[in-house]
Structures are given as C-alpha cells and as structure tokens.
View (cartoon, rainbow, N blue to C red):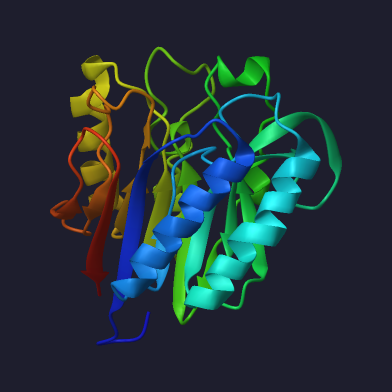
Length: 254
C-alpha cells in the first residue's frame, strides 16, 4: 500500500435468502449501496450465494455469478469478495465434494482469483473439501494487496476443529497483505462472542494488518457471535455493525 493512500472499504452483514438467484440479487443490492457511499471494496459473508451446504446447483451458482454479480461489480467499479461454494477448486478441477470459497472479483467484473477454506471445522469436513494450505496466496486490486480468510481459517475455534491452527492472518501478512478480508458464518451461540472478537483484535495486532469482517445472520432476532466490522493494526475497531440484523458498514483504511 503506498504511503498516504487510503481506501474506503465496506462489509455486508447479511441473511441468506431461499434461492441462489435471490441471494445474488441481495448481494448486488449491497454492491450498489456500498459503491454509492464511495466504497471500492466489499466483503460478504461465508457461503452467502449458495447456502451453507453441498446441495447447491453448480450451474445455478455459475449463472448467478456471471449474470448478476460480475455485472454489478463492473457497473459499480468495486472489488467484491463473494462467499460461495464451488464444485471446482481454484485451479478449475472438478471436485467430488464442494469447497467453501471466497471469489475475488475486480472492478472490471473479472474474477481475480479464489480462496478455498483451509481450516474447515470437523462439521464442515463431513460435506466439503479442504483447501490446500500450500495454495494460500494474496491478491491485488486498485493498488491494495490483501488476503482472504473464511471463518474458522482465522481463529481455529477450540472444540470445533481437529486441524492445526495455521494463523493465516500472520501468514498472509508475511506474504505482503496489508488487509485481510474475513467472511464468516459463525452462528449465534453467545459462548464464543468474546473469543471471536478478541481473536480478530489479537491477530490484527500480531499480523499488523487491517481486518474487514462480514458475518452471516441465520436468525434476524438473535445476535451473531462474531462481529462484522473493521479492526485496525492496533486492535481497535474503527467500524462495527450491530450484532442483530442486516447491516452495511463503511470505513477508511490507511
């Protein structure tokens, strides 16, 4: 990131709709709203497009990306980190079980790359394929170098995973990332709210990066258990969405 340059970034705390098409239209609406407020990056929740399961249609998923999401990015000149499952790995190979992915789309409406969830929970692994740690990479758009993490990638929640904690934020920072965009679907169990919150603060400090997170709302009447917002490299929240309901938040990062 060049000295003195700032970026206006956004996150969308969202509920999933009934269909992939409805989810895509809701994401496109958030894209337009974020761009209207001047944001040049937007991160969405984990698996927001396809739903958090293996039963989605790959063709329906691909149609929604091509017909709705890519044009919205191009029309609004914004880089979007889209939560979506895929039966193809980042190299395009077909998979027997889908990956949980973040698809990075540039402001020209072209796909920059994909991050696959590297530390799925034990529950995830019953139906999804794990992304390979050696495939971890950074991305660049508009002069900003950044990384992507997906929920348990970031914090390896105790009791939910038997995989080792790889501390991906620090790894991404070592690769040159100045920002980690973090897509979440952590649920509403309040036991882990403090853990998730402090993990984001602690790893922002250890990695020396901004963290921009967006969580998925499963129940609009209950608070999510991991905040959507922006943490700076000193561990301070410079933007934070309410824990209940859908919200779009905006913040400026240096």
